[in-house]
Length: 363
Image (cartoon, rainbow, N blue to C red; front, side, top):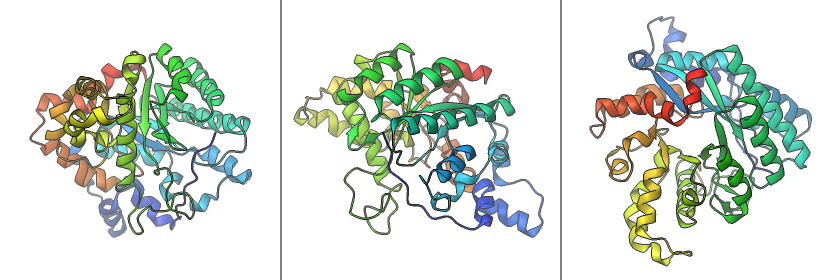
């Protein structure tokens, strides 16, 4: 019933502005320039951002009051608000963002976890209502607390109009696809839910503070997060999750982690897994998962060897990814990728998300 606490240091207020608008834009602002930022070149495209993080200010205050967090140890981007998000979105040509809620703490009881989820849901609902058409959101689930998660599904999907749920790749080393989660996945299947996933620190990391780097000097998001997603995907393939729950849609972040690059290896060597993984199951699940572009991701040729282009969704990872990483690196690389046709890019930016989540038309 908890998620690992993050050990991330706060930074000066100026860095919040850099996270909001990007280093290049912050320099222009400091020098008094008013020219549009690099994202303006992308504003002509209509985009739906399927991977934007959100930390509710009401949750921060509540969690600090109960001694669950030290707000100064949350990442600086967790203090950015909806206005900063709108500025970023306008610069990147993003019309609508789907919020992935962040509420990292070790909760003392299931009741306290429910309160944290409810505060976050109410905050996201207020943001969406205050900015019509700009925001939708996922329900945060903690699969190691099945009762709280079941309540959150009914509350968020059944009552508040959330467009899906957000889960992490593993909870205490128990990965998605494990039979321990079957009861909740049956509920999600009844809702035909979009199940958005996100990685975290690998289980059984090195001794030391929670969230510490597995390899000193290399932040876990650099390598470990991609492996965490890959482990979850392979476990779901092994357990035939999409066959057992055919009405859910699973979104893998960061272009599936390492999954596209080990697909052939998994087909060849899956017989050594328990249960055995058949090559046909690998091919089938790879074509049924959805993948977002948050990254920057690698060139897409390998991904498209295994994945239909209409299962790729645009995502930025903002504000965890700074704005200039998105506008100066990720977006130009995506638009220049020779593996994508213009029609496929239009689908990635907008149409694929609309087919997956038709409710976005009424955001």
